[in-house]
Length: 111
Picture 1 (cartoon, one colour):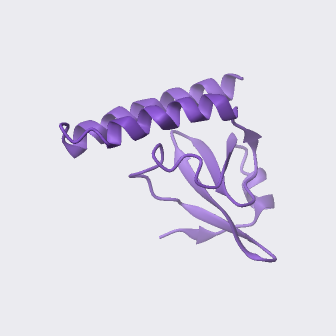
Picture 2: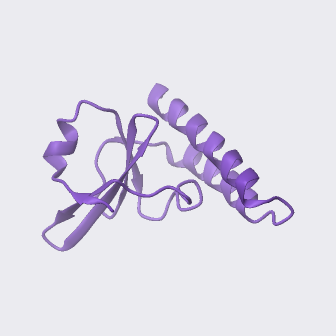
């Protein structure tokens, strides 16, 4: 279950926040559940995923440091190929995608 937070509370958390647009990381984040969400006047704004001590903010109105789009597309395509490889079992797929996600986070933080 995710809880409602304000964007101000998330910014003041003192943790790194990476910003990803709506549906731009659906294969990378598959298998992870958001821990929180924020709203805006029009309704839902974004979800927050806690991955290795870093928040990933994704949605219509995410906050944080923007992840390079080309790099994100590269990792998202790799994750899609892994999830679509039905010769592998779910645990192997999930572990491989988790490794990709951790790698992408480290590159995004360093950029």
